[in-house]
Image (cartoon, rainbow, N blue to C red; front, side, top):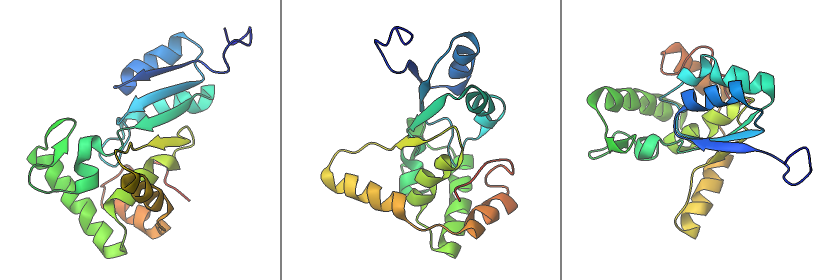
Length: 168
């Protein structure tokens, strides 16, 4: 259909990067919608999937970048991680990220939304909205100024992977 000009691009939407990785190894996709598997809390997609996307020029549209909420709310009582109550290990890691956020005056939501866009295979992040106020908040969050030293500190404290690309 692409070759015939009927469609401009062919894509796939999945919840796990491993499924997307296998799909692009087997077929020629232009883009993929990936729900939350590359975030401040999850960077295993760097182990083959995202490099393959970059090599094959497959754009990744990231959804669910808040890991079901905890990267928007922080480590609060009742915080959700991957659609379930956040386990203590995740709560502790988020608390450590929040500490760096406080030290650099960076909102956790801004770090969460902007981090993923540092990867060259991820040109789009769709956080989702329910209201106009949430849309406006997301737009402001995307515009927040985050210093390079913030990303370097997250790496130094091993809160994100050393090989994770970060926004410029």
